[in-house]
Length: 364
Image (cartoon, rainbow, N blue to C red):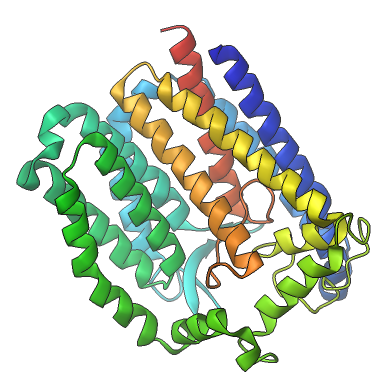
């Protein structure tokens, strides 16, 4: 049974990646030619990301996942250090007012992606080591909230509210399933609401995103432009789509067509059937991932796989929701499909770890 789960997870991931390859070229070729005089510019870079992702995926699959426990604290400390370094001018790269990336020759590395994986491994190890003590306030809950608070603070300074929310939700769900009292979690959530309100409404562009989310037509040529174009793209596709490669919104109407809003281009070119197919693939991925969680051979594997499945699920749900106008705009790519270096690579690494856990669960 577990072998079938691994095969299904692998096949589903490969199909999503193949869809991504096709749609990235379709969505970016004209923009790439206009900017770089090379219509294959983004496709070639994405293929290099796939190659690196495959290498890292097989690397994490070749090592017993239980050995990751000894690196839980070092990787967490490294991720926090990188989150500090990326904020330093001259070291971190600033794009559109956000300082979230380290820029290398052919790839931009986003340390918050490593931070997500690091805190999942650390928390899974903590729950495994502490046992029932994780349910206590001062020895279980508070230490984890201090780590989470520091990481979220550094990510908010970039600023990147979307990733901070994903990390917070994943950690809270993991702690809740681990047995932490609901009153602790709810109390912290209620206490955080005023801070969340300040973070959103004291920053002009975030406040504008909320107002745009409520009514994008208040400023159709400004803050509402992107979500309006996204909805036009989805609506233009109808049931069967306008045909692969025939999107009009990618012709400099829809910003980030090959990254954050690639789902909209899928809807336009492949129609409702195409978007439903992508959603079904993610549902299958989540279903197979939860089977791995259920059959994990130990508590560390259980919570590690749970955190990884939650992360991929949340990123997919938020991205699709943003494209449809269900959620306010967030800079989160669609896992396995969107163009994006470090995010895509860490999604592939997550699949490698999940298959590793499934393999050990099959042959304990």
